[in-house]
Image (cartoon, rainbow over the protein chains, first blue to last red):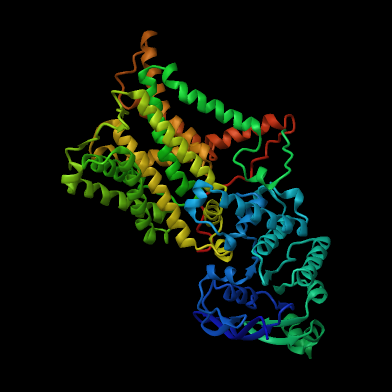
Length: 256
Length: 364
């Protein structure tokens, strides 16, 4: 029984077939990577799963439930968290507040209770704070708790975004290029965190990544796409040796 | 620099980080409560006016500063609050009922407007709210039996539990009433901003796409923020009606909307304190200019013959602020405070990354 099932997914922007007939499924506890050249449609697949775009055709099922018709803000409540390729944090809030915003799906109070700050709100806040602190500890963000996002270095922001996704308490986490723009050390940290997410938190990870060393290190299976179409699906070694994948990356001459 | 050692999450959740800031608020409250004994009627009335403007400013701050929705129509919500309160009191309801009901009516009206309007943002939302303002202005004139039409309406005298809170007959009572209402709203606003609702407002302001990815219903959140914003502005409108005493539609002109926008922008977008600083500037500076001009007469310079001079100087001050201090008075205060706190380590570029808040259109 797979956690995420994508069947014959397609989206066309006018004449551009950004994604065209992509199918794959992700098993619970699996680390699944999508690779491909720039403009292959990797991020578009993410945007389709997180319902930013409506697919032209195809279905997406999460835990057996068809999520193709849901709204973008319904996705987090099901337990699907995501990060963005170009960091989309709340720049004018602190790291702590950004992580607390990740707890939105767990809120149990309405705005009237919030305005009066009833004891229940404080109780809930303490619980949110405790859960967020676990994320801070996991990602070693202690030094940045009260820092504004706007003043943080790129690498830290990238980690904060992973933290915000984890604060949702998801079952499936979508990481859009978690290692892009990171140094070698930072990329290694990301690899360890992905391992820990799977092993300690029982998360399923779906990621888009260009850094093949990271992909080889953490992923169980890899899907290669080019021009919106699937090229190969299998273990990292199989996919990299696939002639179509080599052709897409290096040109047809190299494959011959 | 003060380092606060926290031993429980409660310390993070509390409104004040340490006893010193609690003490400052207590001192400020004590001075404000004692004000009627310290100053004369003229300044007390000005203080009440400033409080009412701060209340309206807080209302607009929810929408503009904390949710990123620019509104040019908030004078309409002031008007609805003022007319609803006076009309309900004329119908025989006491102030303690008519006042919250006026806020509620305005809030519901604002939320109703928001349902279609929040799908717009930036300049388009500003134009839509301007249209709302024009419609409300016409409605006020058309609904003559309730609003008195062009002629205007008299705000009834306030009496609570037999004690008069009349703006002229018992000015100190009226001032305390304004102070209590403003304090209560400020407390509720501060609570809101440290709770999930307030955080969802900030999320919607800074990045709609990731707010959605976190499960925040952007449309509903913006409608709620706009509703709360207009509700608080409606309360301010009700008080403004009582403060002026006799008013017609001309009190709530487009200039009031623009002045309100200046209150929040010059005060400091995204800070509750900004609404207060902005209100002080907007209400006090014109008075200050005219006092200064009168004083110049005694040294032989008579500027009273030049029309519009006050307005021009006032405008220049405002323009100067917008050009040289986009983070507003409160932003400037934060910079000064930081400079002193970390002296002598302050660097010139420390606040370079500050950006404006009105940029929710990123995903479009």
